[in-house]
Image 1 (cartoon, rainbow, N blue to C red):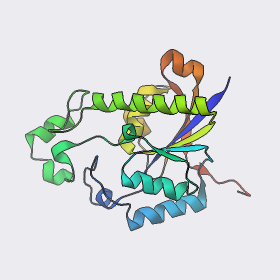
Image 2: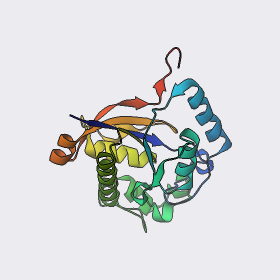
Image 3: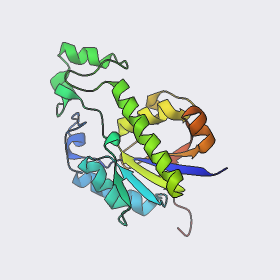
Length: 209
């Protein structure tokens, strides 16, 4: 049975990440440190070769995708954008910790959005739309390998909800420029809307690579 590998990659470190700020729909450029870290990974590790790149519309993801896969073949998917943190956008934890609405948000839950922001349920629903499009596009176009350059929270939610074996979202936390490889088959996806989690990436560089 034909298998399709999807490589989920978190964007490189940004200036706002370095400052500890919430950035969902807020634009923040990849920082100098982020570029250096990604350059180091490209020299010492191996990113999989792909037929197609799907990317979040946020500039930090587009820049990361262009850096890892400069040959292109990218398609922007709005469904891959990070959660909208509403009133918490651009703020640090120390600026929010005294707010009652922030304390309520930290309790979690599918239907507990930040004020003016997006719920986890809404994020999961659009993630399903996005991954469904990717799987169908890969099958239709006979792509065997694809990269998805997106956000840490999106990767955690997608793998927790649609991946097997099942783990909590925190099990899929990954560093900037890193992520996970999954395997999709028509049977798995059409019968259960799930894919198999294979492991982390980028891979260790072997002798001669």
